[in-house]
Length: 382
Ligand SMILES: [Fe+2]
Image 1 (spheres, rainbow, N blue to C red):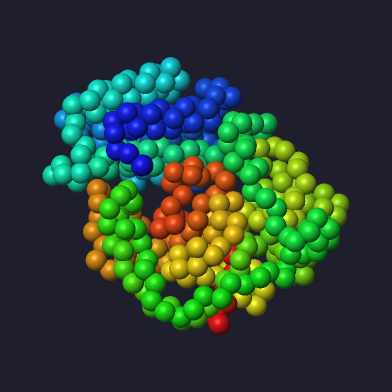
Image 2: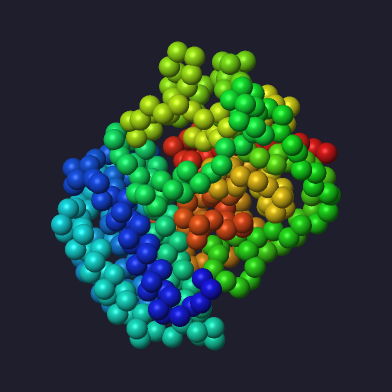
């Protein structure tokens, strides 16, 4: 945030909450409590978890106050409670849930009143408002998780602001006719010189622990596509190889339709493909005679890339600690996920709030997952 004033924090928190509530506004309590997928939480859990995380950090940890509902917090622990069982937990629902969200917010703002969040404060949680930035990022990131689930709700309409973000991605392809008839396979590649590149978030300002410390990596020369892989290119690939379509696609005669949210919208060949797994992305890149970029290549090439922001971009990298990594403020955000099980995604998607779409931000997921808004950009050795 440009300013760490309490007024700016209060305003940003309230904007994030408005967005959260706008996402669920069209739904009834029954829909909020429904498990639509074993890999996604019921929305009521997300809402309670957002408020509980706020209570834990801003009210209990910072404010030293007792929780409103005793032991409730343990049911909102994301590590302790796998997504597929979250419906069976005695979590808050309906009116009680809404009241809890509002009560926690009131207490959090009350605590904020009495806190010093200047640059010289000893407590790193409070210094320059770190913990408030963390809370904001957390709520906005859960908005994206909620949007993943909302793709499964038939007839769901995106809030106008989010729909505008989704539509703001301009289709690629050089001309209207090329977009409609070409496959978009001929993609300009940006050459990146061999050398040392600084990777990670600067020392100051908000970032997650896994983005630090900033360090230098040595890269060999490589080329990277200026634009992400389009739907048209992915269709050409499927037609040639018989590969599986992205999630939510269905065939209708000789065209493909997007069925997310129960719609039947023709796939625009010029737009970047999304809802592909790492396995699909990796296979596509191989078929195109290329490969996925490493996350360091991606970050080094970021200033030259077009079309970042429609879909997360899979990289070839496992989610690993940077040299000198220190967990902060808690191990469960990143450290427990390090290893070769998860692949890193970079960039952001149309469902990501711009505030959390930082160039050093590292997202991660299992290689078979495609409920996330994940796409492809290819690279090649020079
Ligand atoms: Fe969370």
